[in-house]
Image (tube, rainbow, N blue to C red; front, side, top):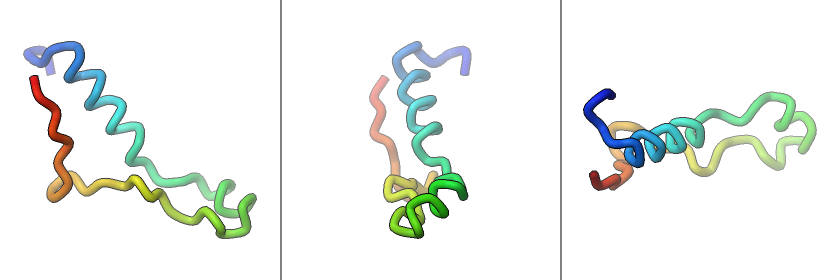
Length: 52
């Protein structure tokens, strides 16, 4: 990642934080109303469109 610019790194890091699964305690606390991450992205099919 050394050759990438700072802004691109920051956007990739933000996207990496977003795709995590929802913790189990959230599913329990909301009584399964919130059971999955709606923003989940597949690395192969859904591209980020980050220009550099």
